[in-house]
Every structure is written in C-alpha cells, then in structure tokens.
Length: 332
Ligand code: LMR
Image (cartoon, rainbow, N blue to C red):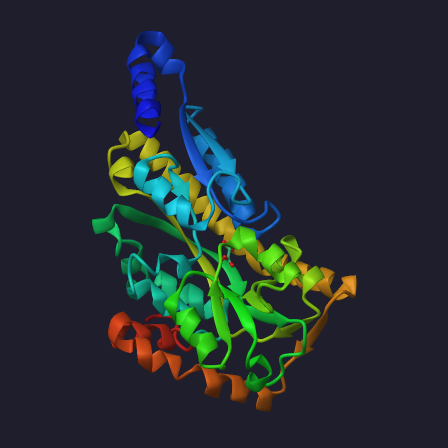
C-alpha cells in the first residue's frame, strides 16, 4: 500500500514539468498532538503563515493539530518515511533516539522557563539540536510550553500522597523512574489517550502543563492539581535531515526565517497561555489547585532528585552541570 502511494506520487511529480510544475506549490505537512489554543498550536499556525509568505507561495504548509494525522510514536516514523515534514514532539519523546536530550526530564532541574531558555540557547543546548542527525532527525528550534504540574483525584501535597497511584507518563524512562521513586506506578500512554484513561480510571493521575491540562480537559476528570513546577515540557521542532538538506537554498532560507519568527511567537505567548489556562481551570471550580509550602516542596525534591544519579552516566555529567548552571548564569 505504502509502495503504491510512493509510486503514484513519483509519477505525479514526473508528470509536473514546464509551467504547471512552476505553479505547483510544494506541500509541507506539520503534524502535532496538541490543540490550536496552546503555545505549540499557535506557533505552528504562525509558521504556516510566514513560510507561505516568505516562499512567495512556493510552499504550502498544512498543519494537522490534535494527533489528527499522526499520534506520538507514529509522527517520528512519519518524518523518517517522509510522510510528514515538520513535527514538534515534547523533548521527553526522543528517549528512544538519544539519552542526552533526556536531561530535560530530570525532576527539579530547572527553576523556571527562563533557565530552560538559557540552557537551550547555550552551546550544550544548541549541540543537542544536531544530536540525532545520524538518525536523520534535525532539530531546527526549541519551542517552550511550560513547567509541569501534577494531578490526581486526591490532594498531592506530600510525596507519600502519590504512593500506590498509577500516573500517565510520556514515553521516557526518566519519567518512569521519577514516579517509581514516589512508589507510584508509571504508565506510558500516547497524549491522545490520556483524557479517556483518566476518565475511566485506567490511570489515577498525570503530569502536564496548564495549557495542556486545560485544552485537553484533563481538569474535568482530575479533582486536585498541585502547582509543583517539578519539570518542564518543551519541544524540539524536527525535520527529516536528508529532506531539509536537499531543499533549494531559497526555500530553506525562507522556511528557516519563518521558523525563527514562529519560535519567537511561541516563546512570547507560552507563559501567557499557561497563566490563562490556570485561571480558567481555577474559575471552572471542577478541580482544586494546591500550592506547596516551602517545606512540602523540599520533600518532593528529596523524593524525586535521586533519579538524577541513575541517569547521570547515560546523559553525561557535563550536560547536567550545564543545565544546572543555567539556573544562575546567562552564559553557560
Ligand atoms: C504529552 O504527551 O503529555 C505532551 O508532551 C504533549 C505535548 O506535545 O505537549
């Protein structure tokens, strides 16, 4: 089936010669798993507008949000096969391609998104964009979402409160270890399956940003959300390296310019969209938002941080140190 699609596509491409070919825009697909009203959703739309403008219509970008075209695992495969050109998975989802990017999953590593931003802009962060080139994935940009909050149908104020509960996690071994450290059970699930899993009780809780908790309506099926800020959900915009490198220079430059501007839009709106989502959840009255006291926060840090030592060998101490340093300095 796949082969025949390729054959038909190739014949169609060959048939397009002369003036007709010149007018035919190149179709570029951008697939992602979140809603339009999220930082990533907004940035993908902005990228489409700008890429079409800067290429003078030579490129047409089709954006597929909400796992409409491909869900979590499939979207990576689709980029490798050339079925989609742009994806922006959460950094946690590169686990099976490289352990280095997993540095972002270490609990309580970054104090806030400003620190994440400094790390990504520094040498270590920029090198990570190219760390999967041997697997034919090229990172063009980081996009922020925000800090993760933890939820369940009971207040989670102390680490012991999570004991015995089952939490949905993204496909990352560090996140699995993080919940095991709480004596809870992690369950890897695609993003598109989380709402239902929470609703029917296949899992008891989850961790995510305010914008995802709101736009996917997780708050309707979770009574208690703790503002834990214990980790980060950010993205890497990734393309098939061979496809990107073979693009005509003018199109590549125009799409890079569009990507840089869309990145700025993403990073400008991320904080605001997450704040608004939090306010809307609070106003809905369906879930209670809990704050941690400094003492309670210390207990969560003590419970989760031992996970670092387990992954230090795989990630590399230098990389972890550079990430830690980004909490304080502007140049790491
Ligand atoms: C998740 O799977 O929880 C999120 O990473 C989804 C996303 O892309 O924000």
